[in-house]
Image 1 (tube, rainbow, N blue to C red):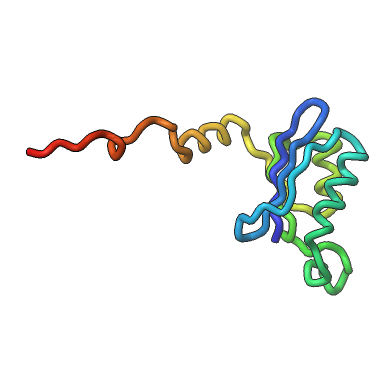
Image 2: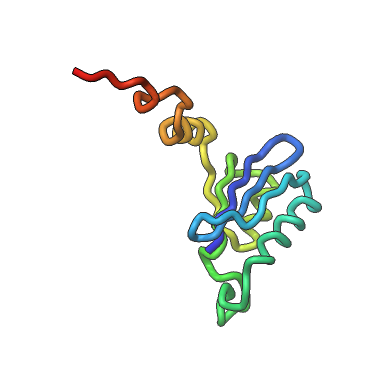
Length: 118
């Protein structure tokens, strides 16, 4: 299974592909449009093999590629769905709040403070 994160902007997409263990397999800034989508398909295809195909249809098996993107419409999303990827629209504010809750603040912790004896 491959997971694709797609940070969508007006004229480009910042994408990252990871495997089921969370290992980064690739990342790129892709232009909006057919050239960018073609490159994304190429990046994904580099990490797929025959076991990722449905034996009856020869097409990509359901659920092999999962994409999270900040929108649920438009030609880019339509192309993702047409390729057989599972697409989940993610609210950018929800992602930002999640990141805030699950990352370190960078503040100094008490382990760095001098210890006193009683």
